[in-house]
Picture 1 (tube, rainbow, N blue to C red):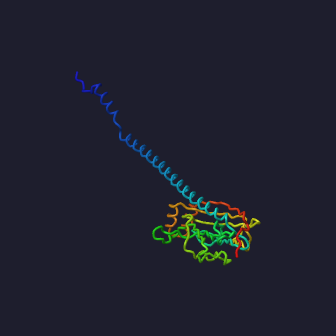
Picture 2: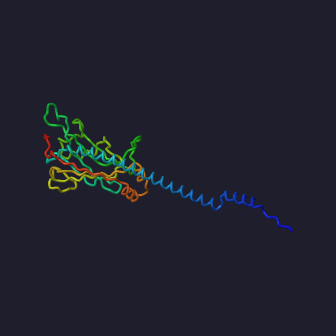
Picture 3: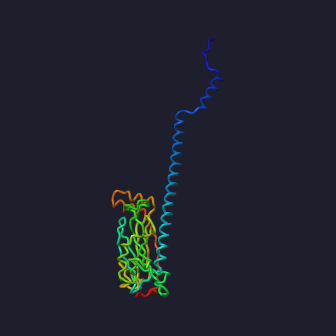
Length: 267
């Protein structure tokens, strides 16, 4: 009897085992899709980590600048002399800064230098804190929409602007002084809240009119360098203000006055 050819069982088993050792197209596509999901997940993790690190650096940068500026101003303001003769003058809402109004503060601070030889009276320093445009470190040109806290000081009796003993309104000449020191850069706002002996905060405080101040609150808003650059590049004032509102960090300190009447007698 004739039998049709049939595959050898051993050959069939060997071919089946070899086919099971290879991946099908569906299995390869599924594996690639899974690998892609893992890569996307890791990319998201790395992106979130980078963003958190950048935000942390921004906050640290603003913290250092803000706290340093507050400490510097608080120490000098704490030595201010203000009574019915010597001015401590606040100019409220004097400078427009990215949608906010920053203040100027002028005062006389005590010094260790004698007013004249063998004098028992101390010389005073004329000091002003305000916000102005940042300047380019190389060209000196003003940088649009970027601001800094500036200290203006007159400490030499020989200066034409040293008028503390000659003019009651000596502080009106302070803005004409070209020499200033930068206390902090990338500033969004600077406010001084000056309180009288009754605890009332008065705008445009003048110690010769309102009496010696009891304490002053200093409020500073700072931006990181990268945020300040981004805000300055914005196309409109409204956009700059919105970005600054989101990015600014606020810092606060209070200065109490112990030497209400001071110890300098004007001639």
